[in-house]
Image (tube, rainbow, N blue to C red):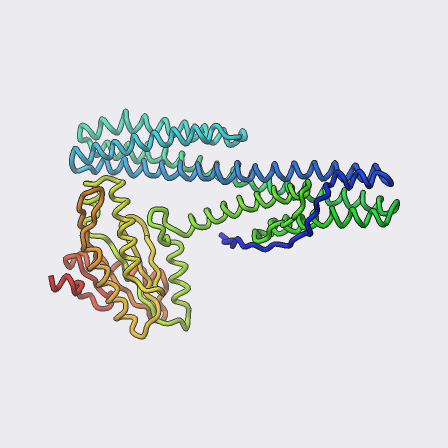
Length: 455
């Protein structure tokens, strides 16, 4: 996805305090038909552009936010079903079940809010598909899975979950993806209609002004300077939007209908900037910790390992004891622990390093630069192990985890994917070596953090 950088490119138009209506009245003295047409087109296109600007906001940004929340909740409900299945105690089971009920309530609330918006027939059809699948999902979970789980029939439970529950979740997610595509299509159509309205206004106004110039060259020049200049500025901005450039702003400093049109256009561009920034951030970052996600990590690692670049290292971090903490504190507590872990890992790195979360309790650091990359990587690994060994305080309770780290060093001919795999393999060697230590891929001897060795 192309990331658009919203700037503040402004081409000012000289301030004018004479309304378009007054100018038209003056022009009527020589060409009443021409000037009346100019005013009608300007007012009409102003309303169209303003309306399309509001549609871009209401049919793209808000609905996509609601659909993103629905998608996250459906995925979370799937995880909570697994958490309930794997619950090691009645307390953990109760917590997982409560999370499921909270997921249901959130899906119901957001679905109702989304259904109340201005939806097209295809959108309502996909929403109906989602609702039907979601209701069927709850029936399978409560009427089939829960009794099997209560009786301890885990084989039957897993069969129903794989053959009935997961396909329903996939149907829900597919319907949400279709709804997102439709919302984006409606937004693009609104932008196209705004552009068409601008082009129509430009063509009609130019034609009418040409006829006006025949009647009065002086008055025609005045009308052209006071009306066409703002219209052309709006046109330039709309052309820039059509080429995915959102850095331009229609700075039309008039107190007339053209100024209102420019204001409506600027509002539309602001909404589009927000939408692009939100989508770009979601594509490249982990929603829980704010760190780079797997896709952005691989892109950064491939850039770091380009031919001729300085050597680098990859640190693959997996938390020790995270599942026990997550089972004890619940999903919210586990999320808090992951966010705090991301903060601690980030503060141990240098400004040139890259930190990412692959998912679950797995994190990756790319160490870049430095005269001795091996020494830099091992020093960073030791700091991470030491920092993560310190107690976490979550909701008034003390949680303890550790970290097992695998280190891979770059070399000629090694790809980014292979290097990440080496770091992953070394991490598992650290796990089998007793945890709370790091292992270098080409030197599989576990080394604990210096502070832990002293302790």
